[in-house]
Image (cartoon, rainbow, N blue to C red; front, side):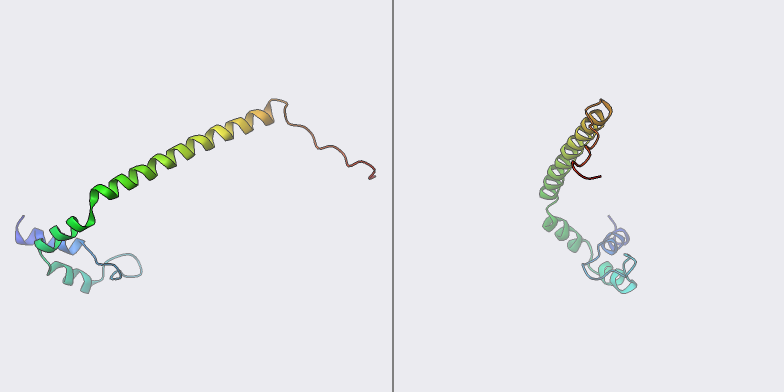
Length: 97
């Protein structure tokens, strides 16, 4: 990676709280980040701990998929029970005209 690429990569890393209201990096933030260089980038990714983040996100994804599957099954069961004649009409209140 040459110096120019290192500066571009550093500019892509934005510190928390240095983002404009629309979610983009401010000009001063990009200028500050580009001065950090390659050592900053390497240290950032070491501290980020991608493996533990990946493990956590994989677990969350599996839970979401299981919940979606259970939801789909319950929705089908409800549809069958209302379609299959198991649905009972509400009874009239006794003694009220």
